Image 1 (cartoon, helix red, strand yellow):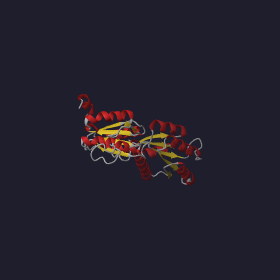
Image 2: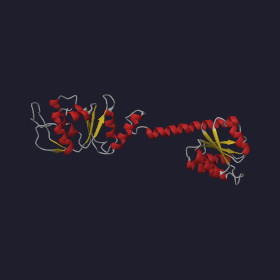
Image 3: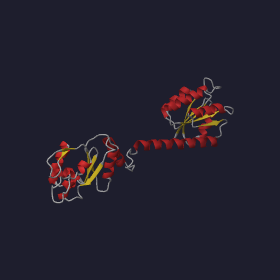
Image 4: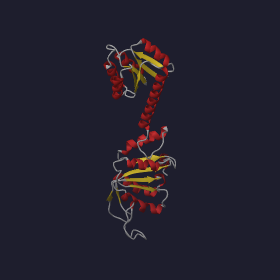
Length: 294
């Protein structure tokens, strides 16, 4: 059951509120010291607080001090202050200090139950929103609340601020490019190009020139020098989709690029330095492919 803390030095009021809150787990305190002790021990969602507490029940100063201490320790706890009929000034002061609401004596069971029920609903809603804010993906492209998607999003968020090469594994259609773009958009290269190429969709004899570019006259139809995808991603991110389908013959040239961060265009003789981040993706079991040299 939801816990409610009743802070009041009047035993008659305590009994009346205990009866009113029969559907809740009610704990009691009669002064500021015991109220704070009960707050720490039980962590109640709602507190009803009489402003007239010992050692000076005729003055609201001790009740207001208790309110401030409760909210300092448990800012989400909803405090309903209970005042006398002619104490509206202190009730409004309590609201300005952060109390959820106030109620004037004499106690009416139906009314106080409604106030407490509303306070509990608000507390639970705020806790749910707080939880969602903590676990929701920081990357707005990624939509989902499952345990797997949240874990993957958090990992992507962590590596986005680094410059390490990244491999995304997953079945076709699971959103690997969405993750790649999210990593780029949350990286230090976010204002630079994001260049994507699907290694499985380009014929083997064209893939090299698409990636590395070519010099004029390198082959029939090469009428002008053309930068490749790698050069086009300068200072940004290169996304190599379906890297597991890259021809073995091209992998040696890719390895040199990945290690040295230099390329040579097809038909070229000079090295071109490149400063890019590389993100790869595949639906294949690359570890098995490496082991089988395929």
